[in-house]
Amino acid sequence: QVQLVESGGGLVQPGSSLRLSCAASGSISSISTMGWYRQAPGKEREWVARIHSGDWTDYANSVKGRYTISRDNAKNMVFLQMTKLHPWDTAVYSCWGQIATLTLTQYRDYWGQGTQVTVSS
Image 1 (cartoon, rainbow, N blue to C red):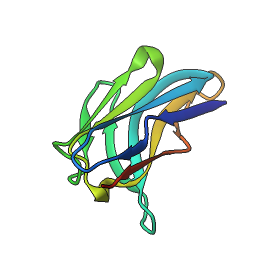
Image 2 (image 1 turned 30 degrees about the vertical axis):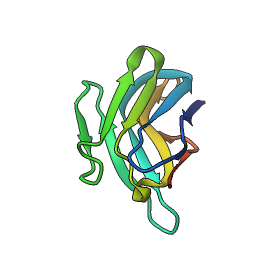
Image 3 (image 1 turned 90 degrees about the vertical axis):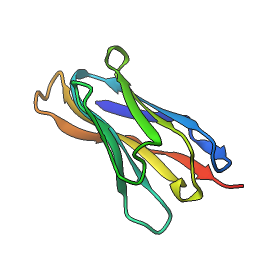
């Protein structure tokens, strides 16, 4: 059993910064790529950023230069530092990880429940 739990969302003003955290727990053997997605009201889920096990990162064009993804492998955590937030960044942000467990050695995708980020004046 693996769980991903996000935290750090909230209501902020345009131009502000916010840092999201995601902690993976359970019978984890290894974590490969981790990342973040978001879904705005009435829109499809959108990939935001990912970080590979070697710390190589890539970003959606809409957030490049404003968001930074990082991870703490010892704590099985991934972070998303968001700066210069715009109202259109408003969405539910969910973390995702490719995780192998102690009983299932193949990597499979796991998702968190999401945390709401609202950017509004």
